[in-house]
Length: 359
Image (cartoon, rainbow, N blue to C red; front, side, top):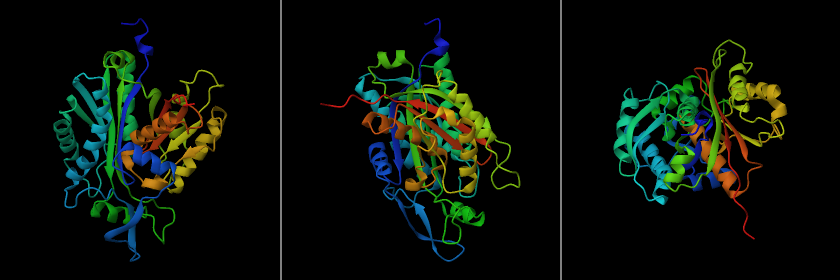
């Protein structure tokens, strides 16, 4: 083992997605790049003003699923897509852990969702890679990056060789939609500052360089840093947003870029139309503007696939990998951030070197 094992790289060796724009990452990423919207009227839900609720649905999922079944129908294919990269190495993987971000308790969320998701994912994924344990992180928007930060620290320190990290969420249960409407968070003709409810799942397979070599895995990118901070001035309260929590998380991950000549080239974030999120990002940019090649170079995929809650972070990593490998990213370094209503703020820096263009 290396004497500097605490500094070893954390590689991205698999990615997967299910969103309202597509049942896999290539379809979802291509649709976001083309700025295609997955928004449509809900087939039967009506808002307080009497108008159809506008949502972003994964219309390819079967009807009649319970809330837990619906989450699993999003998560398992996305996780299988990420794990499919293992097949290229030709070796079976035993005992890999998984950490999955989930929404917090709210109307429409199954009370036993954590247990159900752990059991369903372990059973549904054992054919591709036998999972030793599936842990859940029910903290909402930042949950996927919280799961990422946990795995990143363990792999970087030498205490873990590989981990499946993901997030899954859906706002489309009728009780959840009514709750959003009552809280004036649902975007509508009478509420321009609300968001479009979406659903999706994103998964990322992380490994050490040694694991990647042993299993003949091609690195798709690297997680340079991942961090979680806490915001005290929360959305939907009387406190004034100044973006301190997000700024703290971003500053932590910026430390991984040792030289100021090595900037952030683009940002992917979970701004969703709510004024609070735009404000906290604005304050963060003011505090860290000198670390970006262009502070205005950011992507908010909620404009295309709706707000995907706990799935946000892992899905954003998939977009960063797709943009880097396809050669349309502005540069190799992508800042990702997410913001939970309970105050958790997640940030990560993903580095993806573009593949050489063919002559």
